[in-house]
Every structure is written in structure tokens, then in C-alpha cells.
Image (cartoon, rainbow, N blue to C red; front, side, top):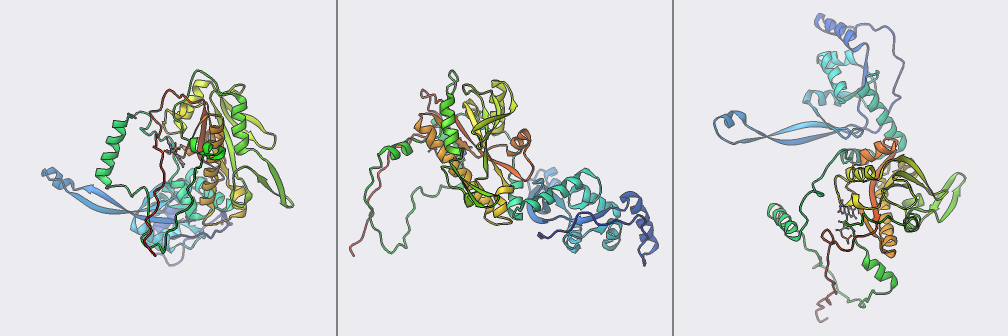
Length: 445
Ligand SMILES: Cc1cc2nc3c(=O)[nH]c(=O)nc-3n(C[C@H](O)[C@H](O)[C@H](O)COP(=O)(O)O)c2cc1C
């Protein structure tokens, strides 16, 4: 069930309510009780409203007591909340009730209970769990009303909003930083994965239904640009005994996120030019450097202000605190916290969605923008013989909290990292052999 239509949040509410006509004695007493409990509360359906039927496997306890292991399959209906990202269990009766509610319309909670033949407490409980929204001061309802209003105002595509909310992370700690990274450990993990999920799809792909194959001129790909691109790699070992030079850091930051030009497309509508492409030329992604050890810059969270090419310090901290924060925000990837600075990519969706309002491709486009910026960042770092990385495995909600981002308007997408590489270590790096393409087998024509 999905509805994107909306109605004003608060209509006029009468001060005195009368029992609906035609109710029997039982219903009338229930109605009176509701008036006390619900205080004339009105409710409406969630907007948008998404439900899933989730399968769960539960042990059969009766058989377990007899020493048998038997798993029963059961299913659960859940409302997926595009504001909190939570999956809220709902009963079939609750779903049936939600289905009778017109999108955007407010209902008197007591009347609804009577019509649905549910105890009034059940309506209250639905609002308390976030299955429906109440119009009172109750904190959850207030938060959901505000969240839904923002999603609508910012022009989120509802399915993108749902995906974004359900894939957001807070306080996640992976085991990447703690587990063994030697070749044998890697191989064991891959073997176990293969045993469980079967073999991986082949690394090269060839279509048997091709009409013809033409061998292209062989590329040496060894000029200056090609060599730079060849030497790009993801670095996971950094030196802790030297700071990153300010000039080096600035070159990479400016070269990736700096404004090289601007064009007024219409009065008040200005497009920026950066070294990377951006959907619609909007460049909605802002750079938030978490400085750990960069010459001349205080450790802590900054915002890079492209208009003046300056760093605005938002959250000062000690170097040790900045490292610890980097580790937390990259879900415990300890090697990334050894970098000299991480630059978080934060999209301003009020700018992006101004053009791509309710657009099914808007979310994809903004993620792709981040990918382009990442590659530019990598190449500029490589040019200076610096180490770089990109990670999408971040606790985006914690970044948002720390930076005071506007919920549902500004979203953290990933982080680029930079530092002076520790060339004595390479345990965490790929070591690919050079590959030369093999000429295709072309049958006689
Ligand atoms: C979208 C994206 C997300 C990534 N996330 C991580 C990550 O969370 N942790 C990590 O160690 N590397 C991450 N990487 C780096 C990749 O693991 C790396 O690019 C890949 O292993 C190839 O190595 P190379 O960059 O040295 O060529 C990410 C790369 C991309 C493009």
C-alpha cells in the first residue's frame, strides 16, 4: 500500500464531541472511555505507507522439549517506516483498518475504533507504535508528522526514501578491523563463503549471442595520464609519524570539491563547475573533512566552504579523539582511522531534488555523484604519491548527528580518505598481476 498524497496536518478540531448516533450501549461506554483515554485524538494513515510480509523461521518449542529440532515457518506483516527505517509489526486486523483509511484524511480515533470494532486502546497502541499517526503532542507522532512533512517538502521519491531509511546505519561496528588479514585468513573466508553460496560469477564475461567480434588496437596505456590511473589504489596503511602537508591536502580537496566556475542558468539558479560531472550540474555534495593530522589545521570536523575556499571548523577535538571518531564512523575499520584526514560526502537534497523532485532516478544520481568525486579524489592523491580510499560503509546517521545535519534533507553518503602511505606495509592491499587482453577467437567469415 502506498500513497503519496497528503492533507494538511491539522484541521479544525471541535472542542466538544458527541457520541456518534446509532451506537449500542457497549459501544457507547467504549466511546466514553476512548474520549478519556484518547482525549479526542485524531489519527491518519502513514504517508507514504509501505507494508511487507516477512518470513520468519521459529523453533517448534513443544517438539524441542521432546528433544526434536523442528523449525516452523511463519510470516509477519510489518510496516516499513521511511522516517525511522524501522520495521513495525502489524496484525492482519490493523492492516485491514489501515486499508480502510483514505490517504491524508484525519479520523476521530474513537469513531474509528467503533467502526472497526476494535478496543479504543488498540487505536492508541497503533499510534504509539507508529503504524498510524496521531495529531497530538505525543513525541513519536510529532516526529513522524515532521519526518513525513520533510520527505514531501524535500521532494523525496517515496521508494527512495524508504530504501535510504532502511539502509541507514547508526552505531554499527563491523569486524573488519579486528579480523586477521593475512593471505591465508582471506582465503579461508573466501572458501567458507564459496561453500555456503556457491562459486562467484566469472570475472570476464563473454556474450555467445554476439553477431561479430572485432579486435581493437592494443593499448599501451602508459602515457602520463594512463600511468597515473594505473597507480591508483585503495590505501589502508598510513604513517603515524608525519603529518599530511597542508598544500597536498588542499590540492586534493580543491581539485575534487573546489568551484572552478559558475553559471547563472536563470535568475537565482546557479550551476557550479567542478572537475567531476554532476547530475544536472547541481553539485549537491558538500565536503566535510574530519581532520586528524594535517599541518596547520586543527583536528576535528570541518566544512569545506567552496565559495571562499576555506575550512570552517565545526567540531574541534584532540587528534586521538578524531582518530577514534574516524574509526566509529567507518564502522570500526581501524585501518581507515590511521589516515590523516577523512572527507565525508554529504548531499544537500533540497538542492538536488529542486530539479529532480519525486524522481525515481534522483537517489541513484546523487550516489553516482559521490562515486565520481571519489575517483577524482583518488587520482589527485595518487598524483602526489599520497594514499587514498573510499568507503560507503559508514554510520551515516552518526555522521548526521555529529554534524547537526537536517534530517531527510542532508544525507551522508560515504567518505574519501587521504594520508601519507606507509609503503612498508601492504597486507591490506590488492596485489594484482598485470593483465594483457587475449585476442578474441574470430571464426572464418
Ligand atoms: C563504493 C565503494 C565502497 C567501498 N567501501 C570500502 C570499504 O568499506 N572498506 C574498504 O576497505 N574498501 C572499500 N572500498 C575500496 C574497494 O575495496 C577497492 O576499491 C577494491 O578492493 C579495489 O581495490 P583498488 O581500489 O586498490 O583498485 C570501496 C570502494 C568503493 C568504490
